[in-house]
Amino acid sequence: QVQLVESGGGAVQPGKSLRLSCVASGLSFGSFAMHWVRQAPGKGLEWVAFISYDGNKEFYAESVEGRFTISRDNSKNMLFLQMNSLRVEDTAVYYCGNSPGVYGAIDYWGQGTPVTVSS
Amino acid sequence: EIVMTQSPVSLSVSLGERVSLSCRASHLVISNLAWYQQKPGQPPRLLISGASTRAVGISPRFSGSGSGTEFTLTISNVQSEDVATYYCQQYNNWPPYTFGQGTKLEIK
Image: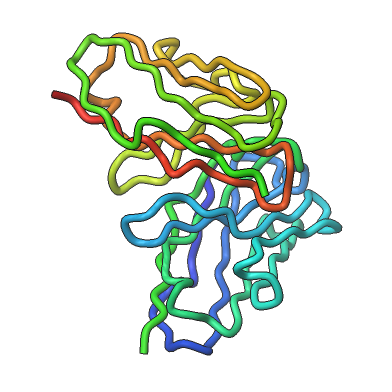
């Protein structure tokens, strides 16, 4: 079955950086686009970033544009989110998920990795 | 940016009832609309894509309808395991891929 497992979350101070990872199994990773979606404590879902199956297209939410970078390594079935200049409002559980392409729902989701930004 | 508005924010129903959850888009999204279920402490799970196509393994008690800007998720014969928050999401105009604020379903 499809498994997506995130890691790399933790507690950091404002202005610092974190790199999240997501390892995929049970699917042909290089054939799927990938997303990062976050959920602040007690809040709803917020889409963060998208990367095409081949890594040639990237899209970002306005709230993270210029600070976060999504990337992937298809040879290792891995997805990444480099988060720089972190803010308190970036505190959330971060989920990775796969989709068929730009026009596609998020088929499978990982369990999430928590990120806490606090001084 | 397309704004997705869900109603009601929360609802409480009796076991066995049929319930309809609404999702409205601020602009046309055609049928590029998904519904997700999120149970407490769990990640979201895809229920419906393409406005009306059930995802693999999803009970036929869940059905989606609508197109354009108005969409509905209907749950028939509500069970205790359906207690969750339900989100709609458009993937027609991006970025961003926008979610509704969610509808929380409880059992009376």
